[in-house]
Amino acid sequence: MDVGGGYTYFDQKTGREASTVLGFTYNFVNPATHYQNGVDMHLDWGASQFLTKQWQVGVVGHLYQQLGCDSGSGDRVGCFRSRVASVGPQLGYIFPINDELQGYLNLKAYGEFANENRPAGWNVWLTFNLAPAAAPPPAPTRPMFTK
Image (cartoon, rainbow, N blue to C red; front, top):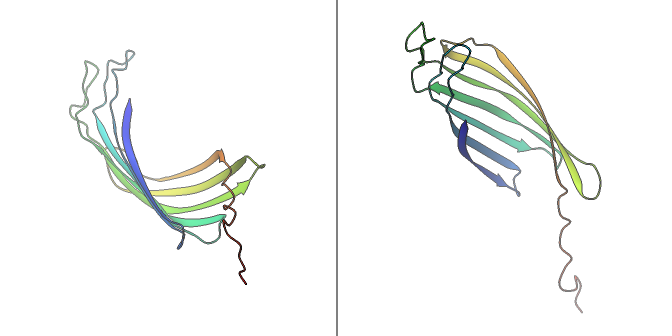
């Protein structure tokens, strides 16, 4: 079970975006192994710059820290807390699908470091998202030219 919350800041004038999500994960006992991982905390973050209304580049990362010890009758190693940090690039592209929908593709790669009790390496993620198309700008409420 995972619970968390996030915040995104986006400045439409400059095209700068920054997002962060903090979450906590609770794992149930695995009935086959009688092992239960401890509660963990994860912080995911990203900062990017829109180069155009469609293209975005930036940097992403995450921090992971296991807060509680592993447990259960299948636990043979004792308190086995793990952690890892990562950072890497991202590239995003927004494109129209039809008058009502737009698509978003995001490619990001994480290089992991500062690992303890878990492997470190590279993770690559490709995300595809469908969303309502951006609303057209409102029509002017008064004439653009006056005499």
